Image 1 (cartoon, rainbow, N blue to C red):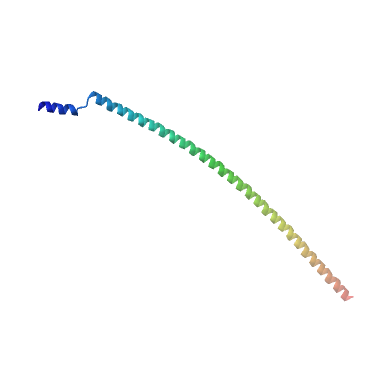
Image 2: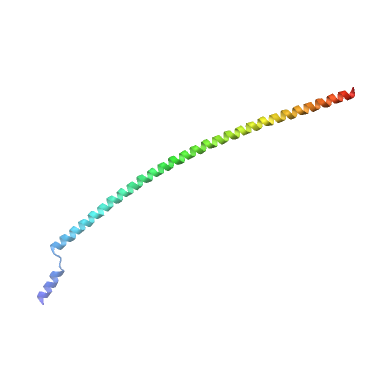
Length: 118
């Protein structure tokens, strides 16, 4: 029975070779983890650079849109100013015409009264 016990204990005990194999496996796993860390850092950096580029492109596009809207608004303001100036000119023409017509009507009335009195 002692021999059977020794055989059982021997079969359950790790040998130096078993320990070295496990240590080698651990080193492989550590290497894989380190490779994943390096790849993850590289992926994060690539994503950061891409995001920065996208933000810069968006900023430039937004700036261009704002500049375009600013020019468009200035053009519309100038068009409105032109329309106001044209309306002022038309108002002045109308006033001069109305005053002229009233003057002619008054002169006509004076002439008619003068002829009637004579």
